[in-house]
Length: 211
Ligand SMILES: Cc1cc2nc3c(=O)[nH]c(=O)nc-3n(C[C@H](O)[C@H](O)[C@H](O)COP(=O)(O)O)c2cc1C
Image (cartoon, rainbow, N blue to C red; front, side, top):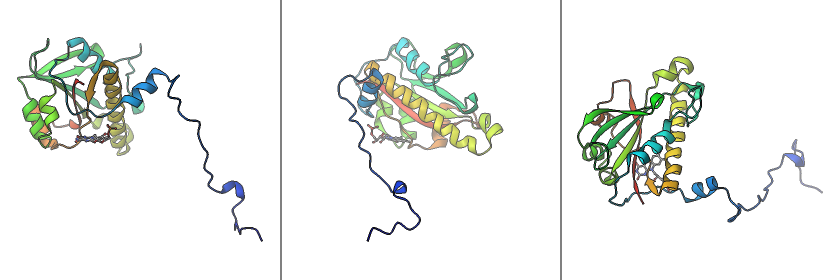
């Protein structure tokens, strides 16, 4: 007697397929970067230059096409994210909080002064924010996307923040710069420290420093 399959045909049964091994050699650069990517929580005492900061911000949300499309995918190309740079200074930029403007790849200073200690406190005192020379903060303006997609726009925004953060992680590996995606913080405190408008909600803090 064979096994009783009921209504199932053998073709419906779960079957394990052994995949070819991801080759250790002959891999593309992007696969190398993906392999090496880790969350890094300790950084060297070395500032990031303006040109390095420029590249990291561009990787997160920069313009990468002639018609204004950006480095991270965005549902409906509505771009609900805002990017801020929090720097302790020491490089070319004065200590402060700067808003990244993708359209003309500029930074607008919104606060003068080193906010890293306060930002760290707002994030359960996680020390890497205090110790990193800079942090990138990714925030959401949900209305930009919920106006078209309703509540589903909320999840689209969170997905997009993940894409932007991963771009930062991967370029960081290439540049020898480590980061750690931080989601544990008090929203209202972070908003207060960065003086974010009422319609902007912080999603991620990414401290950045040389490994
Ligand atoms: C949504 C999210 C929130 C996170 N929040 C924190 C955090 O608040 N503090 C922290 O140290 N790491 C945080 N992490 C990093 C994870 O701990 C880390 O990705 C995980 O341990 C896997 O390690 P890896 O990134 O090196 O592969 C977060 C990661 C994600 C995806």
